[in-house]
Image (cartoon, rainbow, N blue to C red; front, side):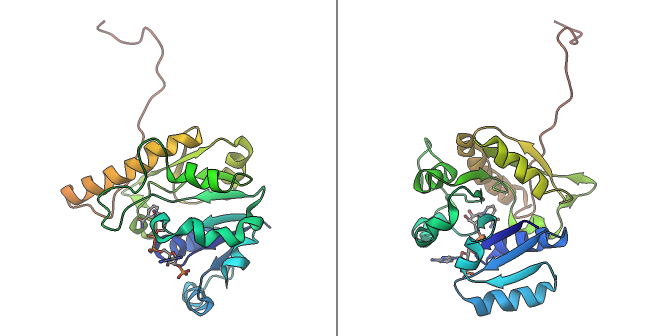
Length: 221
Ligand SMILES: NC(=O)c1ccc[n+]([C@@H]2O[C@H](COP(=O)([O-])OP(=O)(O)OC[C@H]3O[C@@H](n4cnc5c(N)ncnc54)[C@H](OP(=O)(O)O)[C@@H]3O)[C@@H](O)[C@H]2O)c1
């Protein structure tokens, strides 16, 4: 069975471990402090999730670092670089500053591209960037599944990912190339601002609406 290594036991890491564990994926939840990871895993009470160090999680088949770029994520991952070669790396990062008011990266790049640049042999796939942590606690809005936008330049990584997320409570949208992460990450900045304005924060997400349309279908012009 494929193992997912999650590095970081914050809001996202723990919720993603729980989501994957609930659909019977094998997860190693890694922390700088194995005692913290062990306590969390005990609380989760899922036989599919085990606790470990970052090295343990980094040696899993698929890796998912759940930490902030602003907290030195690239430097933290540097000693693990050999573990990442040829692996699918699920990147959930949004390059927020400390006050969540802006990004620490300019418009012409993204967290996903910076990680790909730093670890060129890793197969980066961006996902869950647009899902705020609280949504994982109650993922369905009424009867509506919300969307996760998925970006990668690696078609095989997208296939691996779509099998991995089977039975999880989201709709997954193929959002194209890795550099589309520039847009997806900034959509999160926008949803954070809108959520605050309308009193939804942090319980909001996107849904892409559409119907198949054929030319000549419009009635007016
Ligand atoms: N929060 C959201 O709603 C949300 C939504 C989408 C994407 N994201 C992205 O997901 C990633 C994680 O977000 P989060 O909200 O889960 O963060 P968080 O609650 O702050 O947790 C981050 C984790 O990173 C680890 N870490 C490693 N080095 C660290 C350092 N120097 N300082 C602090 N923590 C360090 C820690 O885990 P250990 O102590 O176990 O090592 C910590 O618990 C970020 O890239 C963020 O942009 C977040």
